[in-house]
Image (cartoon, rainbow, N blue to C red; front, side, top):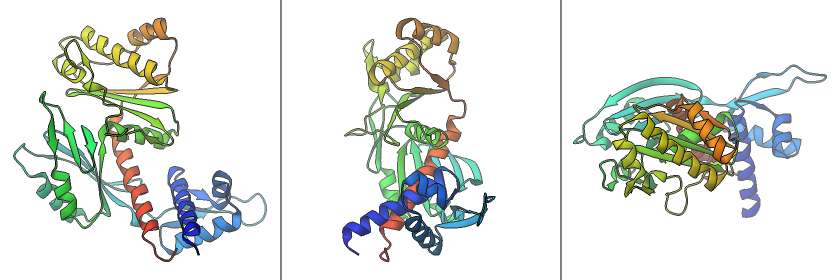
Length: 326
């Protein structure tokens, strides 16, 4: 088989596994229809994925005549994902076997503690196939940048962690993972996700089945925009009243609508002030017409769904890419 044909087969294998994951399970007919591939091609690749234990049979659908179609799902024994959400003084942890949350806990730490040692110990305890880490900040390779204390800080410890571990480590922006988790449940492109918390604002625009990062990872970092001589992140941190908070929310949503004009905006807030939907909708309607804006009260659950998705699809890619038998 030529290299070109091998690459095509790898792409098709990846598409099959991803389709099964997004739909939780699939039959060969469904795969053939959704991926526009022939039944014999699907059959051969599904058998290959079964033999490699990437997927497994989970039962049969009722037949409308003839043989009952077999339904396939991911083999959760091959996808043990350690998901970590790093906050300024706490790590939220979930160990997931695809849809099963096996462990869920909070780990407190102080600023002088070496996170590489803490996480390395956790990895040895749970023995996952990969680690997915969500952080607040701009992602640059295995480093992230924050401005939480009104000055730019570079965090490089994840590179050290990656060098110490024998399993893959994936670093992602927290808001982009919230958006990825939302997309897992509702596959909609041209959508925007904005999250506001006590330290600032993060955003994510979805296109071509994934969040946009931009050349330098700055896409969605609207908290760095200056207003009234300081950044929006600083304004959010210094906010003193609900009315003042509403003004910033108006401004943020107006920017999103005029810059991206998305089909849908998801907004989530973890702040002392709340999202006053009726007031905000009325003002936006008067100036910019009707837009679909949904409040997401389960942003942390969506973040972990996004981290899980990242772990699963990256493990898929690496295993298919590294398989010399293809």
